[in-house]
Image (cartoon, rainbow, N blue to C red; front, side, top):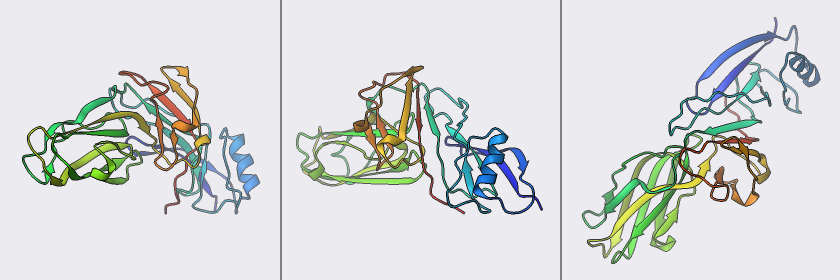
Length: 269
């Protein structure tokens, strides 16, 4: 019976899998070369695994396509076309993330002057969520506070659970390592000498989070800001947490950014 290759769009904003075109590859098992040639004749620029193609493999289409998705301070859709034998995810290249109408960095966008002397632990009031996945800045005003433990819980740009823990040994001006897409809770406990005037502010930084993993600083190969190409600096790339620091390029309210990069998604069944 024929092996069917389907094309699907994987969106990073809403994680919707939309089936599109079905292509028949004919009878039998396809060699790497045979499948690649067939797909390219049908208009797909594919990267075929060197080990060959088996049922369940996904073949990235490097001619990434996208649509703008929702705008207005939301993380717009960034996605890639894939061709796959039956939908098992094995790898991704040619990713593109788009950030529309971003907000300027804001020192108290998430937590605004949380008073720490009232309760230990203090469960902070979350006044807003990050507009797009980005690192968060945490700043204590601490005229008397000498010790604390802070725990922030949320999800990162890949949609995975993320938890970070900080203490006074880390200082009183902090930045998260994860780019948080959502913040579930921020709790300050184990405080010493807290009193009136000890406050916490949590805001947004200029570092944006990618929706897929990168393996090297060179994986980010194109950045466009407001329709203008930008210079990429390896020093602004964080491979461990899949972020890019826009402070050199510059990030201001209503800016639009598109980042092209070679991503990687682990195998799932």
